[in-house]
Image (cartoon, rainbow, N blue to C red; front, top):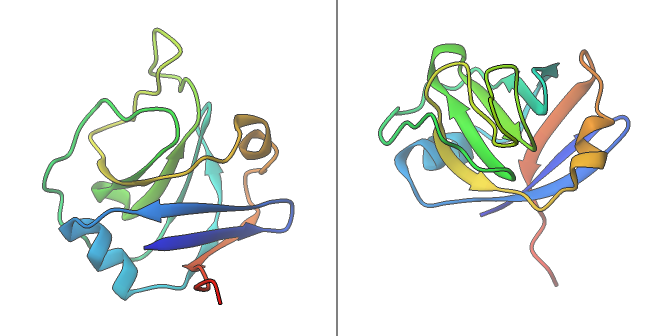
Length: 125
């Protein structure tokens, strides 16, 4: 399913995969929250309790993760404070639920505290 992320300063799209965690998130869209940042990662509370099946410490740049302890969506676009290379490393395991092709420059422009809304993207006519 295609989704849209919207903040005051940016808009970008993503695609969620067909996993239990992604399906639970889809059922609860739209969600709005406030952005937090951690290195080259934005994350925000969804309020959704989703399964943690398949959690990993190795998300790739461009992947969207669900962080079970915080009920957060995370968008990884470069190294985080836990990284020792250019690859992102989450604070604790995340479930990869999708991906985005948004540029790191666009994502770096989203400030902590900005309101973000994630919704289903409109289907093309």
